[in-house]
Image (cartoon, rainbow, N blue to C red):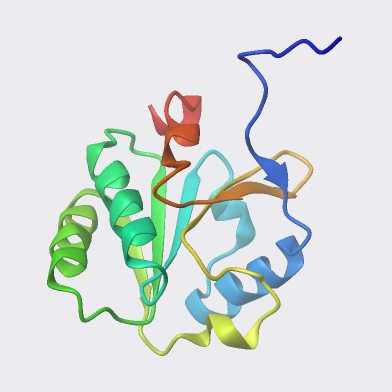
Length: 142
């Protein structure tokens, strides 16, 4: 017999935490301590367009002051760029137009969301147009 809990955490520990930390500190000169108490989105702009656009739409609806957004690369899709402009106006956004993410072991190829826990580990989830709802109701994003 299995029991499901509505309180189950949908984020899992990321085995590539060290690679993500190295990427963010090397590329943006940001200490990982900066991510405590923040919800962080990493958005490869060349990833799946529906995944990226649903994530950008979701971010655009957030009211939280604890959101940080990192974009990687560039996009030629006008709707994506319009949605990105809305996000940039609302939240602290860092841009890696060179796409340096590929030089680090991060395993990020689609939009990704993470939170840093007290143990220093990143807990996150790959985002797509099917599972963006997993983030609704997260305390840190309210």
